[in-house]
Image 1 (cartoon, rainbow, N blue to C red):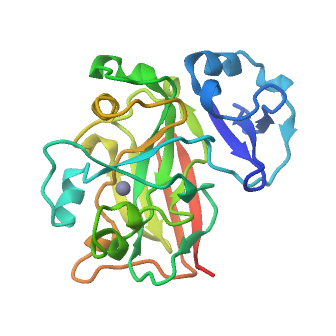
Image 2 (spheres, rainbow, N blue to C red):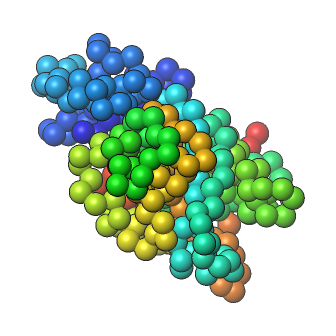
Image 3 (cartoon, rainbow, N blue to C red):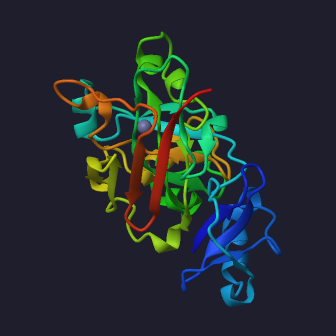
Length: 282
Ligand code: ZN
């Protein structure tokens, strides 16, 4: 299933993308795509509905983030060997994880707001994992049983805030609008192999990232298992799994960063596309 949330920011309703391309309203049954609705039981109840029996949502609609009630937004750093190289960093021995503020979460096509004082706002197309079942000390063999599905994430980053202002990476990852998620939460059954997905990102029509989840250092199973050794993961938690090469920071000889009025487009095979326009913070 391709599950989604549509409507005004903060007032989104749950829906699904039917096989005929229409958006169908789930709000008669589902209060939101959060918590228990993301569990195997919840998703089975949604799957049992006949899409043809659900009201059609007339477009155009604004897509909200495809998951609500995100308790933790966990990101993985330097998880593609070629991105580590362009960042001048070595491939980590263990996954690097950091947190992104959940207040950064926005819809997939909402504007990206360049923060006050920013000169180094950058892009990162990433495969997102949405947790569907509490994971605590899970093995790699069992890890995928805890995944509800996958989505596209732009892990928007401010490099100066991230690396030149002291402390950890959180400051450079957490500004409002730095976490577009969606358009769809694609349930796990529709993704045959999460390590074989093409992914891409362009800025003003110039292709900047063109990679595949094949070159991840630590794959989905490993990441879910690994993170669950340090904290429990709950339904609705999101893990952003790192970016392939081609970020602005890595462009030689001079890095390229975002400025207001640009258009970012990104997508992952089977998971949909996002389009964002950059604007200056007011
Ligand atoms: Zn990232």
